[in-house]
Image (cartoon, rainbow, N blue to C red; front, side):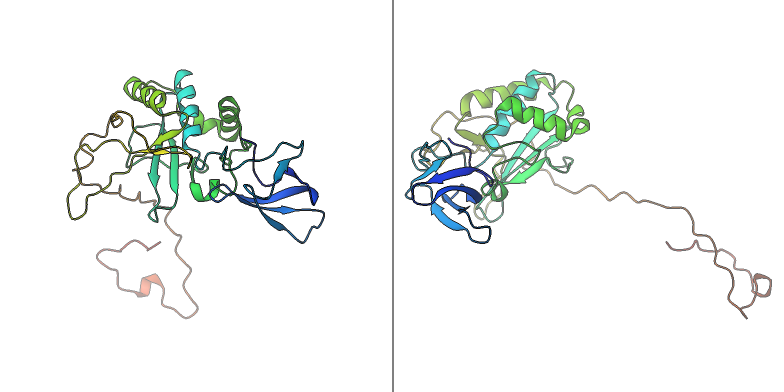
Length: 274
């Protein structure tokens, strides 16, 4: 599929060359500017005969791009696992509205529900649909190697935290990628049945990343290591760490106020509030 993102040069047989200013991968509509800096034109990639700058037709419905980046991220994580970065994990779950899917890469300790957050290592399908990049300085349609290089440039310190061994998760992830890529992704959504408790080990949810693909019909897939028991245990956020700063210096007495010698000493002096 041709790369589609703001800034891509296109050609229209009635208007000539233009530049995409906005793109929606969910609907196939783009906004483009042709010669005028103040006016944009809405075009449908399936019916308005939009072409690339070198004249190749953009057939959106025949060759649609990925609506979500999770499959691309799965390929990145699998390659990094092979390179020794096995303490890298991909969490995928739907937004509360059900319209988009979220993704989160995290490193270090494998704690799925109390995982650490790092700026720039998470995203939403709502952002990807209108600008199909990860936010690391990568480009639309970048290969797995290019995405890894962009992530390493974006946050080398964060990627270094993924160095280490986690053999059981690496083996599970490789098996999942072999069964699902390139057209499907997994979800770690613990769906609760209506008016019922959480199921202890439901089938791993699988979702196609393109609208043209049929629903997943393969064998049931296992959940990642470390998820056993997460359906029934009580989930509590960790307590906030209390940061105590230096004690504030006492203020000088105001004019006319009695001095310390004139006051009656207290049995116990409470510390000054921050």
